[in-house]
Length: 138
Image (cartoon, rainbow, N blue to C red):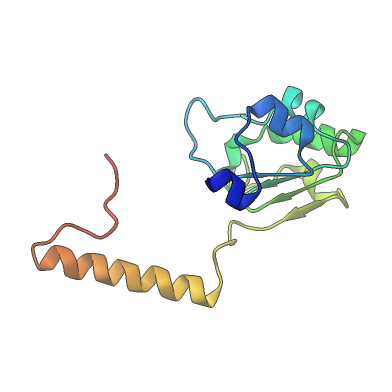
């Protein structure tokens, strides 16, 4: 039902990379997701595809990404996070087909106000003896 409503389908990583015009990353950094996007993944993408990393920097092998962008394996990339923050891979800085941000994708005024409000409401809940609204998993 959800797939139909969103006009989307669950698929495996290989199919997703091979068929997508845009691949956006929004995952945790774990041993399994470190370099989830490596040279093999980048080579499997369309030459017209764009990679967007809004997850964690080390999810993408930036050396492989520089090669992919330089050699035309993919069309471009947008990164809000970097593999070795705060440093940015020097190869990315010279490319016209990469858009780089200093980990500020959530820095809109509205988002920051909501974050502050949520933090205050979490504190108030705990002070009232209630569980936090957004507990951190252990």
